[in-house]
Image (tube, rainbow, N blue to C red; front, side):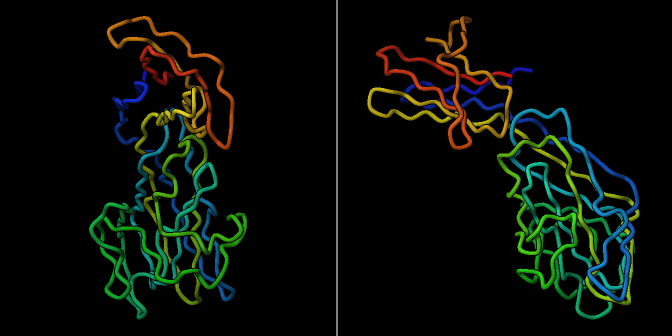
Length: 262
């Protein structure tokens, strides 16, 4: 599939093809265990989803938790870790400091939702922003969660600009004794992607074209006219500097267009 992005020297013309969201699911039950020595790991820990076949970089991630039941949901803390190691707390310390048991609540965690999850009223099904009431949490997520995950933000934008393909891990813990629960419908992740953005900057007599290395496998092509079908691979070959592919061309009196093609 061709996903071009065009740039004219000294004048940026962006024609970006944005892919519709793609959803991947793990419908297996997540049992939220309880113990006298919290934080207590859920079973499984983590629950994983493999994302494959997407092109471009992430522009948005939403997460769906299906049929969440718990006697004291304020005890539950949920961490999402992406394939590149980025992290987001989905929710922690929400649903009330008193016993507000819930049954089969479905949550859509979306950075663009109108409201945060409530700290006191009972949880109800709906779309909510990722919500973290204590920052950092007062305990580390048990291994194999990454070290320092208790300080992860409640921010799904942490995944933007990265490669979506690979294993996504959901770490669920119960942080206090005496209550347990279940996520009986499993969970899913919906991913929006777009081609990696090209940057073009003139430095002296050179023009530097770059794009992030988060996505490999794209080829930089060039043409003197958008009316021409004669696209050719840009030269010299791209080098890698500070997380970006870099191509340096001399400034020319002839305008040129560039595109990334998969």
